[in-house]
Amino acid sequence: MNGEGAEAYAAMVTEKIGPFKITMSLEVRVTETMEPSLLKAAIKGADSIGLNRITGSMQVALSSASSGTQMHFEASIEILGKLATLGAVPIRRRTTQAFAEFAQNIQAQFAKEPGSR
Image 1 (cartoon, helix red, strand yellow):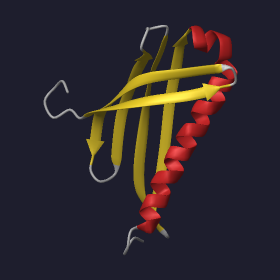
Image 2 (cartoon, rainbow, N blue to C red):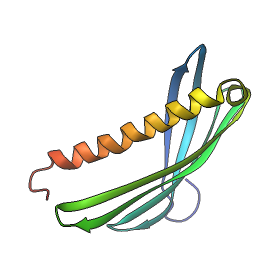
Image 3 (cartoon, rainbow, N blue to C red):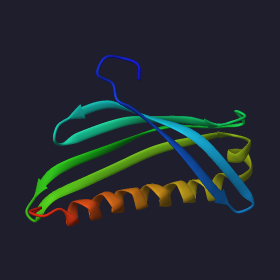
């Protein structure tokens, strides 16, 4: 972690998209928080040989709603390198699907908590 109070998380992501398989090391760095309603993070990573890179950002915002709490999730990801050139459309589709699953998992986790509204 760099910077005072900055939080950084490491992840390894492996995906097979059509004939392509890629493993990337990612760093997710929290760039802004406003508890309990906002979290912004920057994402960057690369494969082990540096042919493919990923950069982007994501934001999770919570707000009060009549039925409880509403979550708004946004992600903006750019994949650069040989894989992006060869498989841009399926990669974009799979990345969108992965973030949708991430948002659904967060929602499901909150729904399981006792006493949640």
